[in-house]
Length: 336
Image (cartoon, rainbow, N blue to C red; front, side):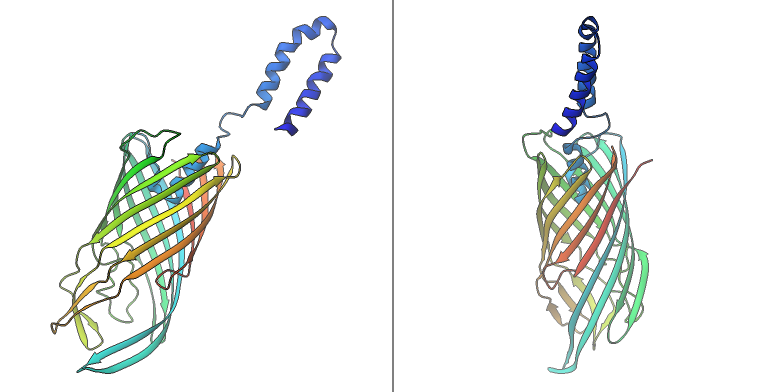
């Protein structure tokens, strides 16, 4: 601010000295007003709090609500890569009949359109529609799929009025519809799954607090899934008939930092711990998979291209064997 003040003050002083004394007395109030206007933030320039709120909305839509009867539409594009070595075995009559090490790589591009509508000032409804393109390559086969993913219907509720000096609490919930291609109904070599194959319900809470120029945020949620029934999927020498996914506990934390009126950066950590799934086969055998843990470290940057639009780009790095190796994402608000 010092570098802007000195040239303006010097210009005002030079103008005053060049005028007669009587004119100086008349011009002084106008010059002071002009100086204040020149130093003041222009309308529409935005402030760091507004930028942080937009950044939080892009990082996790659950941190922000919109006013009643307002509509917000957002487009997200995300790329993820998974590479792994997997041991495939099959047991028959108590002995191993198949033992193979597969080198598998999977590339996924997800285009997501989401719409938020303000039902009340403190209640927002949400619809999310993903379109997924996935390619997988392994030792035995490769395949690609392009189809609709699992649709989400959700709601966010803010029980208490948002205050600047206190943490803001949001209660969230969503229903996942199995509209994507189920992994339990795919025949080997016929393509890749684009959905979970089961319906699910998620409930959670999110907390954020803005302390200019930094916003802190955290979340906690739990997901319960319905079973996949009446299956007939060949799995080695057995036929899979039923899958009951285990519950999942997820949590995350991070911060957003407004570097200026137009640039912000975010760092966040997310983890999901899933209990093992129960499997049932046609011959009566029942088995349970091991617990899985997925952790991702995300880093992003937001750029304000207009007073109401901030584009965010992020990079995620997997921290556990059950996580994607790499994710890239971009969030773009669509204004109509």
